[in-house]
Length: 245
Image 1 (cartoon, helix red, strand yellow):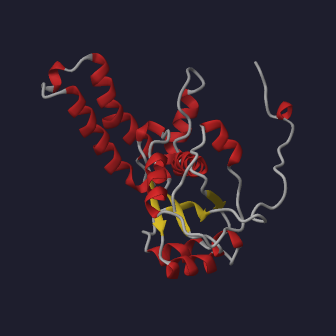
Image 2: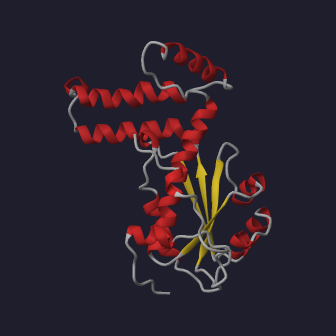
């Protein structure tokens, strides 16, 4: 199916709705994949990219995941599904990827010739990021947390050092990628339904995800039915959430 009349960013944001019922019309798998490539360009903490995207096109797998999503219409009527998965456990691999990228950018010169800025960037991934992410049974995380609170009495310090904090960081980045994906889909007149109501253990087994992965959300994908949006958009008054300081 040809996709026409691509929207501007503002138009796509206004067009995007959580669509609960999709038409039976098929959508282009390659177009959805292109939107996932745009999702991968989202902002991400320390450029760690602790995410994975699972593009589900098999009707059989969609049916199984729908059951794990409590048979909600956003999954049941979807032509395709996308799983946004947070992978905090991949931090060591991502650190090495960033280091390799930086060294390539710096050229073939020896590290002794790196500028102060280049050395700082490299040390960020060699020292600072591992200090924040490394943990053992959550114990080191709490030790770092309390140490940082004490240091914070005297100077500004990064305080979120517990395992739970780093999980939140990974999910925030994954959520940013999900938003990129939804807006990209809206720009080409495709619709999505972000779902958080699902049996995560069953979904992980269906897709064969590693136990250390965490599903941020599941997105139904398709083209909206006329009754696919349940009511008008509601937002609290902007004045209640906007504060100019």
